[in-house]
Length: 341
Image (cartoon, rainbow, N blue to C red; front, side):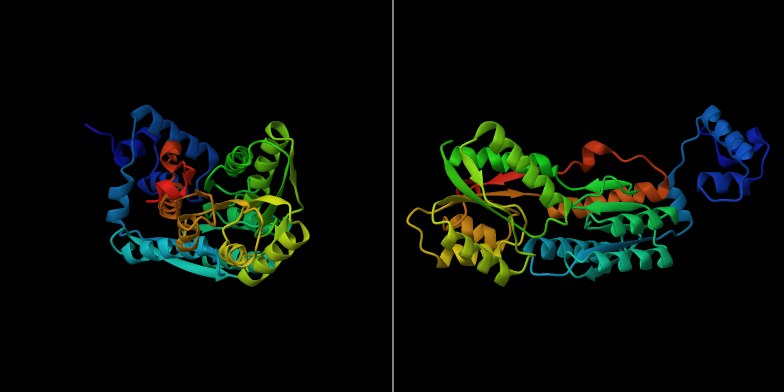
């Protein structure tokens, strides 16, 4: 017969209310009493049925997703996946909402995180910007006891509970290996386009890319990074200018997901030798550019998997359960014209 909370209370010599506080991580229990209850739980082999407990309490998980609102097709798709979760939320006992902030705006993200502290949802997921004030805001959320998941771009030094996204250094290394092989390993010039170097995923991709180029393809020269801020007009202008200033460019690595401006520029400029282009995220724009040969390879992460993973992790953290790391690992997919789904 499975042990019950009544068995725990009898073994520990405490009330059912005290057992409930310990199981739910609530304050108001002295340390020695909490240790006695935890000892009884371990001795009896009690395993809590979280799903049944939540059903009995009619618990609803309130989750907040803070997402950048811009012209980045991948981020738009990520928002669509969250809206899909909202549509299913009543069946899954969730109350999910989206808070949009301007892209690459630390002050706006800090304000949104501070609002989370006041509203106290069951968990928050957000696309991180790596600045000291954002890390301080994350610390305030953590101090309020709210589970935190970073999406797509991480803040490993901050007090977040889990990161959901690809290994961005590995993604950059993959792009560097592909670029070097595409260009035959000889001497060549490569341009790099990012959204903003304020976000860690872009910095890590550049780190991985530059490391592989330096170690395996030393003949490749990498130009200074262009920051398009996911603004199509700005990205288009930057790419057209760098191609005009450097007609010898043989490769372009777009390490962000704001690729519309890049694609527009590549279709407008006239080059004696078309540059090899590697980009991130399979969207309607990059899919079309792969199909017509404007882009040569796309590294992709599954936005749907990331949203589902974030919700699973936040639920586990809210319930005090372990995260199954293998289930939450986000893979890097490589798409060429020949294997488009």
